[in-house]
Image (cartoon, rainbow, N blue to C red):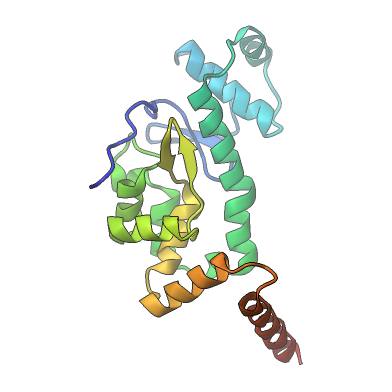
Length: 213
């Protein structure tokens, strides 16, 4: 049965950009993390927290906002930690592995700008149903790939959610047939010291050496 939208998570205010160099506010793309006095205090505090976390200079007003801010809620901490891991680890791994460069530019645009597909008030995190729409795959495929450990996912407010890296990975998995998916699943599930995993590592290393020579 399709999962329900993650209604407890408020995405109507500023949304962190995927490259962590600014945020989105409605249709506006903001470079850096300037304060917006017209926003509610908790949203201004969120912008100040992003500026502080990603090494941007804080204005005097933002420093005061952080000084008096209440502690983050559990859901806020989960969203922030998941977004940070997505940008600083998961997406970088896709780039380092060459997967990102092999993707269709149209898929990259859909994944990096989820609101263009899901609606102006929707951004990351997304649930499995929304991820399926972004990657143009079925809900069942998303669930199967997640259970197989092929998609980076995060538990937020007790539910499983996804960010940019998962959407990109789903697009990369989409053209593979079931035998290729099964092979990936087998590699991930194999014990590091198993004969199967040793063979995979040996063939991979041998192929890499052959390509260099």
